[in-house]
Length: 461
Image (tube, rainbow, N blue to C red; front, top):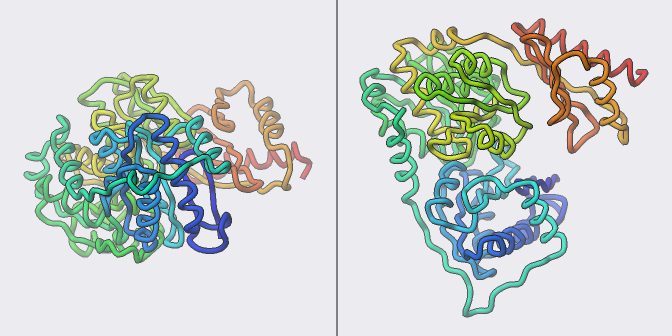
């Protein structure tokens, strides 16, 4: 069993001993700490809760809501929802914070408490450490019987979220409707099965084939929207003569597409395509994390903007976006953050912007993909002896390549013209993750192997 405590939330596998898995005792403890922190921080006694459709969701929902009530906090329960919808609701309801019950792309045995601050964004490193300390020291008191919190069930935010998307100036419902698109949706039997078809209907898409859109939590395949997990979607796109396939993860903050011929558009290119469309109409800067494709930088510079890199993690990307006033940003895992809507990864907003872009381009999805610089990312790792000084190793690698452009804001990223390699130590095991990108797979793999050889030489292995 696994329990991982981080600044942005608590996630783990269901069951096992307290403190070793995500058990009822752990859920109550960390909910108590977060609720106490949120009220202390804001003076507001109201928290928004929503969940994805995974099998343990009802159990978590009952425990979280009951605990918040026990703290004297009122709860707005959105029920089956999405991460971006909860983010929007926290701000709209002027709540102290939000809790999203989802383990994102993890398999069904996982669940988590994702924690949002009062503006509907993931809590910061400082705030997260305060919550963890409160949980560790049991720094919370519960309300007496006359002061228990009240629960309000609110199912209106599906429509409110869609309405907000339709109101975005760069979303063109008429253009999408006139394109007469045929779409296949794979929602991995989670809440995207509710939200994505409803959005597509509102956007004027008349033909929607639903694949795994029953929100019952029985994931038919690994829920991470990667090519190996989307073979059924690709097959249904070609079988139905569809214009594209749309895949989202269980909490609908990651988005990727399948081309009309069944090939993958590539999750790295979700943000690239949406950014291209936004930059055509809104001059400005972009941000993605250090492990995302260089294609976003190319598209940004072509549009006259400046690209900035952030440390890995949504909260870091958002912080950088605000700092440089970025008009679009996100992560290469299919995460689109559009500030005109809100500062959070939002697959629904991404769908609306992408379909507008596609409709206005008059191209097929594969032809649209072909207009972007083509790169390939290789993902590798090197296993090290437990207790080894990884920071010292990275310093030696940095010294070896000191003449190359490089960044140390998150591990070590080294640039070689239009190629790059990013070395990051794992927080949970003695390994260094190695991400490399080049114009083709052979070159990307060769760059990764070069750095692995360098590290082995430094270590004498």
